[in-house]
Length: 175
Length: 295
Image (cartoon, rainbow over all chains, first blue to last red; front, side, top):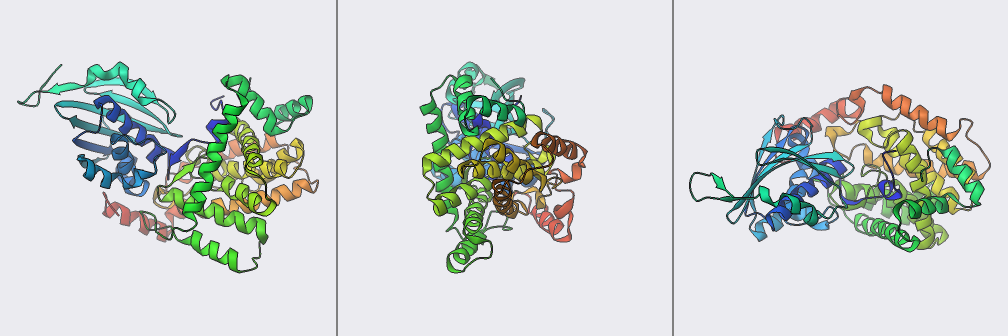
């Protein structure tokens, strides 16, 4: 009995067009936003596999950026997330790769995000039905499920130690 | 508490002398520990979102980001309002509300997954058609959502509801079965009639593959949502007339599961077969690949 509630069938309220390629991705972006305590100033995004092929049609990039700006899965501003990113000083670039080396799934993404002197690398997978999972934090494989109804700001409290302070030289980090 | 089959659902309705909607709400109260009022409010918020989506979608002439859908909701709306339409008022209104919802979904609008985003147009279509044509009040439509959720809950746990898992029969098929049952209960039919309507609706969509052009939730998904509403009304009418499904609903659901399990991978949302593999479908996909990173 995988489906337990009437709201698993009627819901979630979410941004279209795809629970896996759009809605679930907002949660991954949102995790990064909450972990950094606000929107990053810079994000280097790598979309893998299915995401790299259909991200424009599904708005996967907008969903991720919207999440990193603090939007949730039911925010109607997600479709304008790129404009909001420009206004709010979130610069990002997107690389496309065929296969994710960290996690075997077609709907995977990796983000290297910086906010002031802090930095985090996060890998996320969108599993369908709006359910996502963070599988990578910096170099460490993790397993952090996120659903559309979760309170992400509470969820990240256990993982703040992963956020590294960036030193001025050489791109190495210290706690 | 859980309900594992349509048979069990009907037994529960009979024992308690309650509708499917009431039985589902009782179960949700018991399982969640929340009050009826809280749960009804939560469902009402979903109905309200459906209404908002329709209102935005029905006047939005813009194209989707891919350019392969958009603008048809306005066309259907104008036609339905102007002409005496062949399908009649109930189906006509359901068609325009449904297409407005599914087009919005393709354009990154906010929708309610029922049971998925790809099938999100069917239930709003039939509910707001009943609202318009019967003056069915909002509170009653919310009851219809509980009815639909009970039917979807049984289907989802006995079979599947995503195109990737079981083809479009699992997605628009499930949504249409849920819609047919909800119409019957909203029109005063018995729980048994609601389940027969669900079975009849699902039977007529068995075998439907998931073959979206370029993997996008647009072609043929949007129009299949619209067609789902007319099948839902026809199935509801048959059942309200006293027609029964000769195959019990639980067995129809099992058949859907078996068919979906045997369905080749090319026809389960991979965009490798069916309409996605047509000449035009391929052209759209190639255009996407060429412009990897933007349409």
